[in-house]
Image (cartoon, rainbow, N blue to C red; front, side):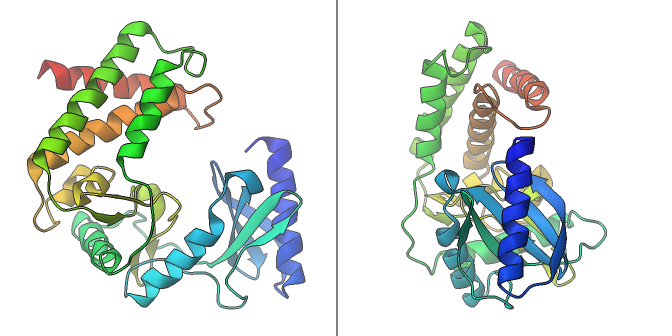
Length: 276
């Protein structure tokens, strides 16, 4: 968020927390991206704050509760307040249980894989309307086709990304395989290293697709501990995801810290994959 917007977001979170009976005098920023994650003190609750126009907070709360009921390793809304979405000053705020981080903060690959397999098992029991993973491909193609939205992307790199998206989409379709509800972005940034074990957060990214699409977001070592992985499909998903997130980083106004450097690094990896 922009600095002025972040200040208003923090003020909204503190105000709502106090109105709900939580003792909230200060806020520590845990994560700042499309939404702001704050640790409010001294009540020790996590507030997730998003602009009203850019949120699916009720979906995220409802799904987290359903996943927890299904035995999935997920963070849940704080039990001291009624689970739901609160709106103030153009922001929506949800309140989540705070988990004191443990060391190391990234779990061992086997623990990561076990947690992700448990999440997927619980997700298979739910009937939840979500986008398909190919919607992300379509959006990336839109960005590549619109030079006004990706003005700094060179033409050779634009064609490299577009070609990679085409080829990997075809490979994945040809591999086929079962599809299910997925987290959508179960990378380490969406995994808490809590005392009770790894817990997944941020369910606004859910999609339907093969489990290999989720595994493509995790460190490579994780897949070795996940049962029944189609390695060829996983390889295609890894390259597809890399092309998608690289395209996102070239979007005008992208606010990911160090995004352009990462985009250049990822383009190099995609080029290397074409040469091998």
